[in-house]
Length: 281
Image (cartoon, rainbow, N blue to C red; front, side):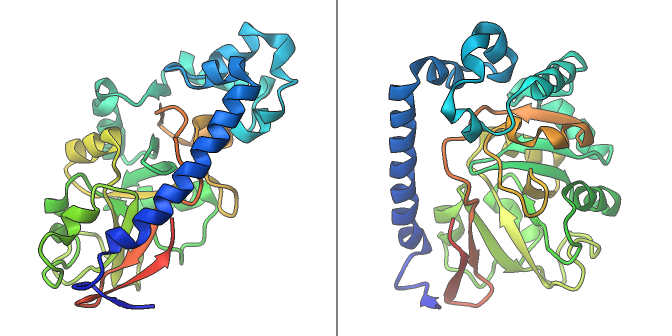
């Protein structure tokens, strides 16, 4: 359903939905904390959970019913995490490690990063080899387009057409949990090899300091997709995609993400004065 931009703000339309979903998430977290306070304290602390779970309380480790909500937790995952930490592949998503992320991207590598919705896989959007690698890691069809992530609203017109949009619209939506679909146009700096045959591009500026610092340091667009194998559930903590760790140059741990698994809201803004929500987040 199309709507007139001048009369209804896209932000208002899906803000209620985000708040409603957030309320349900908060209820689930509160309920979980009440039933399993020991697990909750470990889970919501600032250091990664898996490195300590089994060593802290092995007798409880396999008995907690809500363990399954966090993904694949067990001896194999624990050992994998320990190995990654020893080799310096698993790092906290902090400003200290932005330089390593940027260096990996410039070397054509794939990294795993937190966003404001899900964990994602990111690479240089202008490297056909790196983009191809992401498709291989996910087992995803090459016909499924990738979104691009940039650091700031003022950079969008380097990669897509924005002249038809009302003043202030982009700043009202971004940074935030939305993907804006725009026409690439002839002046786009994106390589033609990214999403070939598709004249539009999905733009992300997550409300997440780490990935925005990485994008700013990289000084170009990142190809971004969810950190899961194609057809599998999206991930909200690093322990839910352990099978992909070995494919990444680095896994940057931002802890448990506080929202659901729906991903970003996708909004088509290609037509002047109209918008269309392609996927609610």
